[in-house]
Image (cartoon, rainbow, N blue to C red; front, side):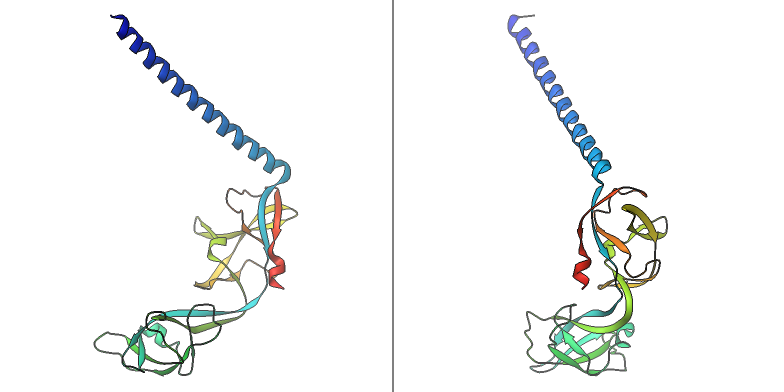
Length: 223
């Protein structure tokens, strides 16, 4: 083998060795960081954001697409299950938070439209912008004195729904029964009581009995 060939081989070996050593350093640092975080959680508790549950009145809004029939005539085509929930005089909103209404339902057809296979809901608007409000929301259902949670707080595993709550500074799994859910969140039928401290953020990688570090309590938002 020539001298130049030998130098090439030595260079390649050194390069591969350098890459391997660098990988080992990175892996070691990552493990050390994970170990440090785990140790910190064991000492101070897993950081979480907690909110005490309250009972409240919740409104459910249905999104419908508005079609301009003429200069002043607007309508939406909806299936039977939505048509049954819409009444003449119901207010129309630009989003699912309510607020100031932009119009009302003026008529609800009781007969199916043969062309679309849907029911026609006529609407009167205070000020309709074709491009801005082609989609509107109607309050089709209300729930009084209920517990409502965001969907992402509820965890589903093995055909069970549960949330994480705080008991004596530790994480406890609490099974819940969901009555219904929609854009407003999930209405809880059973499993939670008012003032139960539910973990709203930081609930991933939690195990029953884990020590918790409550970094923020959102309960004040309910007052």
